[in-house]
Structure formats: C-alpha cells, structure tokens
Length: 232
Image (cartoon, rainbow, N blue to C red; front, side):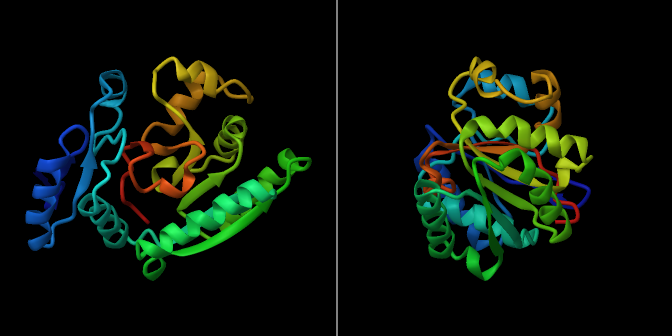
C-alpha cells in the first residue's frame, strides 16, 4: 500500500507461516521495509483495527525472515534507545540477561543502545517517577518492563499523568492477552480506569507471553501497535 510516498507492507503471520516466509524472502531483495500482521484472534482484530491505522500484530510467527523484517523496521526508523526496567531479584535479573543476549544474537546491538534500570519491590511506587524521568531525559523510545504483570497499570497511569506522547514510545510489558476478558484481569490495580488505559495505550503497547521474555521478538510475542514512526 502506498500513501504520501510511504510504502507499508503487511506480512501475514499465523497460520500462514509458509507464504509469509516466501513473501519476506522476495521483498527483502527489493530492500523494502516490512511489517508483520496477524489476525488469528478475531476479537483482537475487531477491537483494535480502527485505532491502529498502520498495522496490527497479535503474535509474531516463528520465522527468521519475519524477525529480520522487524529488525529492518527498527533500523530504518532509528529505534536506537532501548531501556530494560528490571525488578532486582534473581529471577528477573536472569530474564533481563536472557533478553539482552537475545537482542545481541539478533543483531540489535549494532543499531540500539540498551540500558538496564533496576527497581526494587519495596520502593517500587516511589521509584516510578525516577524511572520515567530517566526514560524522558535519556530519550529511550523502547521500554521493556521486566517485572510482575500487576505493576503495569500503575506504570501507565503514572506515565499518563506526565503527559508522555504514546505515539512516540513503545512499551513492552509482561502479560498474556489470549482473550478479551483478560482486560478485566490485567488492569486490576492502578488509578486509571480500564477505558482510560485502553485509550492511552492503544497503538503503543506490547505484551510478552509471560514469563518467556527472552522470546519477545519471536513466537511468544503479543503486540498491539499502530505506532507512528515520528521522532524515533
């Protein structure tokens, strides 16, 4: 699809893995920016289609071709600032290490700068503003929140109160959005209403199949994204 001299290519994922890989192979020859698209969850597609004009992803296929397309998208739009917010515990420290190894193996270390921001359980709420300050001041545009899933709503409410433009950031959180009803379970805490959160994060949020964070760029990644690549 071409619009205003910008070309968007949608690559269909599950359950169409074979043709997706073939298309990715062909398009890579022409140096074309590629994006993934998967609609194996009709409820997700119906709910978010109107609010994500660029692309919708709900599960990346396990294909090196499609992963390469994702890396190309990151490179082309200069997503070079990646922050990993880690809970200080043996479990999350290990997951953060595995995530950084995954980024390294996929070659992102050549295009992105990563930083690990520690956060402690007892001082979690007090540290949120400091974390957001660091994200803004250091211009990190991809934020991977490597913590317990119940912290997500508080994190987003705090960001909303700081008036961050979600269209200029991508936040990747732990969680599982296998069913629409999961909204009622996921956003159980926080000072924002469910409808407020959905409006705020529409187009700018990713969910990993918790706790498989190390595979967030592969099969177990759940994403809703209509991110506009402006000022990235």
